[in-house]
Amino acid sequence: MKDSVDHILQQWSDARPDLDCSAMGIVGRLGRVSLLWQKQLEAVFEPLGLSRVEFDILATLRRGQVPLTPTELYQTVMLSSGAMSTRLEALVQRGLIERMASEEDRRSCKVALTAQGVVTVDAALEAHLANMDVMLNRLDGDEKAQLAGLMKKILLGNE
Image (cartoon, rainbow, N blue to C red):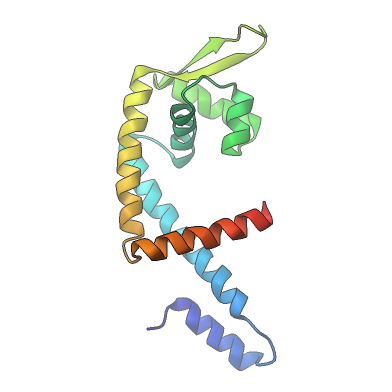
């Protein structure tokens, strides 16, 4: 069975038989899978009124279980401080998070989930986990573990 990347690899093999393009097959497939999965992930969050970034913010607060500063959040979620401020304000307006004055620094604040934020992120997390199970349903348990290990190895070598 051939996928869309096999066609590209065959074309390169015909055009440049002197080159080993096998890495292109791996990186190309990762890119294509990423694009497909982005759409599937967004489809889970959209009915809950969340973007993927907003889910990431709420999930970071939920799993950490302690209020965080906007700086801690944008470093974890990998947004600029300006983008984080905009996202946080939208989540405050929707009643999902609250800002609290910092006890250590009056110029700073901490961000925490509201009760509604916990309910929202928990519902999104459950839908997200079920969706990821569907996304990976072609792999058995051993294959999932092997893929996770290989991806970890790549990340450790590149982060």
